[in-house]
Length: 306
Image 1 (cartoon, helix red, strand yellow):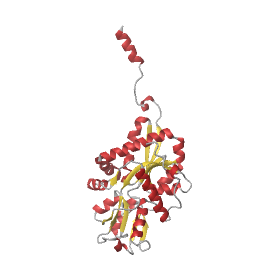
Image 2 (cartoon, one colour; image 1 turned 90 degrees about the vertical axis):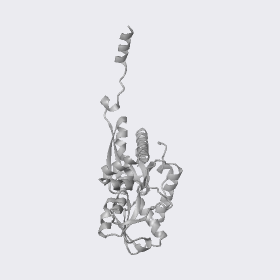
Image 3 (cartoon, one colour; image 1 turned 135 degrees about the horizontal axis):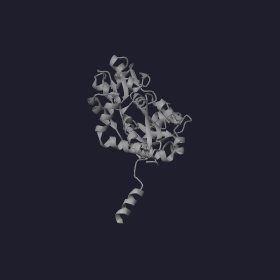
Image 4 (cartoon, helix red, strand yellow; image 1 turned 30 degrees about the vertical axis):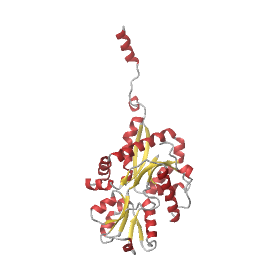
């Protein structure tokens, strides 16, 4: 009798199986990324989200502003966004929300061999990505060095900067990883400046969404933020993951991948230090006339999902 009751209980008990195996359709989400290794954590997110019934597709953009416009208009749902471009979009009538820190650092300045000081850049050409944190930090440094009107800025996306440096078409590049390390290790130039001495420090990347998307999808956004934080923590605690991701996603040699990840600081800490860096960035952009006004901070920063 006990055996019959036990068997009946097994037959009646609900099976514990993943959502996807119940025949339910996966919830589709598009994640906006960039052609830089600062966004490496995003490549881990689809596997973290799948057990929750979320089918995440990564869409990469060469341009920072394009990526944030895609997030703002709903072409992608959330993105790893350069915070300077995010602010520009947010203050031009397309409200954006920073949900978490994305990654700190990740860029540096490489100059042609023989150029060992900023003074030697007078009358020279410097490549930098338009709308980027790199541009904001470079403008600050040029002002410090008295070179604001004495150099020519050439706007190129990060992946397009090493070749002109190698050819001599530009004299320096202010570039994001892995392309800055790629240029350095291929001896296209030498390291001139690691730009973390500005008021914003290593502030760079945020995990962002349009404000309207956050308000419409709070439960989903919570899952996405938690996956972002988990992916970032994996990158932070195991550098080999960042190396392998760089090799796979950016087709880089292992020695370049290893060296470039030393200039990445994976960090989802979104507290006072991160928010202070954001506000310093806004003031630097206003000083450069890259921003007309500060964003509405109460709407722009929302770390409640962490």
